[in-house]
Amino acid sequence: MGKLATIDVALDEMLVNLAAIVLRLSKPDVTRTPEARRALAQSVHQYAVCAARSTDPRVHELKLQLEETLKPSLRIVAIDGVKVS
Image 1 (cartoon, one colour):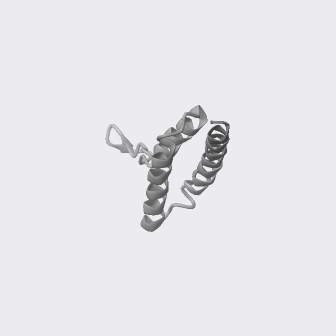
Image 2 (tube, helix red, strand yellow):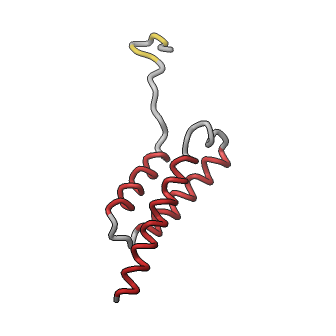
Image 3 (cartoon, helix red, strand yellow):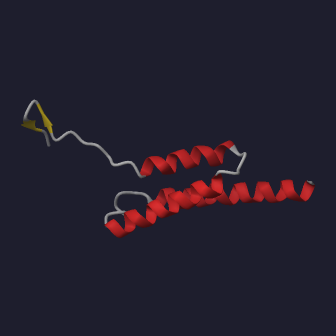
């Protein structure tokens, strides 16, 4: 079982590193186009699939952070009918 544990740890470290890369790519200035947003969504989905079997809490926290990047950012455009800049 020692070899399996070593492989699990190595995979978890790779997932942590991969999440860091995807988080950098999730910045609004990088994901401006619809194609870039779709690619990000696909990357986040694939990460979630890989992370599902991990027992490392860092991997699961990063999965949540990545999923948050897919949610649209909300902004206030008007308060009581008055446009806000």
